Length: 222
Image: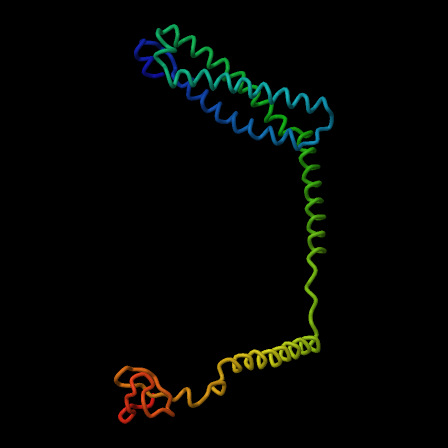
């Protein structure tokens, strides 16, 4: 804007746009706060609620109009402003919308500071505290401590566990022993001698190799 003022050689205060942008930022913060407030607040009457929604809608409407107007200038100033008269007209529009938006902003802030709203806020605060107290008491009741086992019952469980271990493990060990016990094999079959000529494993009872008839004289027992 200052560049346009110097370009057209105008006596114009360029701070109007900065004031308008600050008003848009503050109004957006306020508007974002009013929507959940309107939803959760229990107004005294329908008339009070309707008046609040009327102020809220007008605040949002003028906010969008001013935002759109300033956005056009910041993005495409050459398209919007071609002469000094265009800049004067733009300044008047922005200033007018900023003033209207400022009035609705002040009305909403005055309502928040009013005795009526403070009474509603205090009532809502008491309701919330009461709900929190009820919820905390219910949560305390539901959290019951785990039953403690007596020494006698704990000893009984240990004995039962020990009994299971001592009865099952020997049975399993016995099954393994029945399969892998060396007593299941014939002692003569385990003692063999290998023929050095044909490498056949012969029984220790044989003196000659069963395959090649080699005489077992120097063969060693495995």
